[in-house]
Length: 95
Image (cartoon, rainbow, N blue to C red; front, side):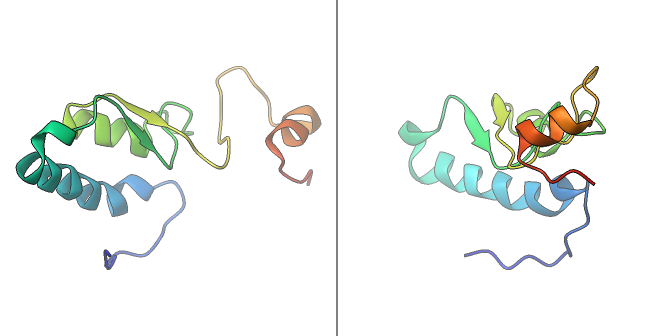
């Protein structure tokens, strides 16, 4: 269990969660090095973050491991507009 000390701020998830994920990977590397992953799937965006560098990117750069962002919400994809079609495919409501 991890106690987060920073509040959630939309768009800045990496700054709140990356230190704890890095610590977990480091503990695994020390205690069970044979279980270190070859790739990490992250509950957050990577390149599809609207700043094009989300949690998966931060963790990948800092850990040296390939990371794939598997987010609940599609924030942005270059060249794709957030129109009705996008909203229907992402499961979001049209506003």
